[in-house]
Length: 190
Image (cartoon, rainbow, N blue to C red):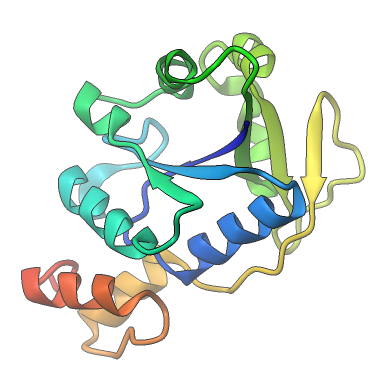
């Protein structure tokens, strides 16, 4: 099997994430995409991040009904800061040795790859799939990286959280089930 892995904070998950995942799955003929919400992302400050278990529930709501999308709680169960290498080692144990893992990142993350913990081992474990983001030049990419063009939406979790704080509608930015979940729990309103 060819399995894509899309990690992130998903704070909250939105149609941009879903469209990106579906585009990569289709372009590379992947069998599944696994969404992996981070417990505590090592490169982000946690001041504006919803509790991990709530972000996990939102991702599950967002992908329900799509048999090609799965959700893993591996980083949340592990507790503490999430490092990609630890997640990949654990996921690798769940699949056959012949399964190929494709780790999906945005082109804006390329510049930081060398700072990732155990990056050389990560490169041996997965194939990186890079999705171009506006303003990122991919002409000088090096290493075993697959570039794919995917139509994306200009939506960000930050913009959604700002809209909520400003009492503006977030309808059509994320699945209705996620919108209702956020409203019911009063997430991001402060």
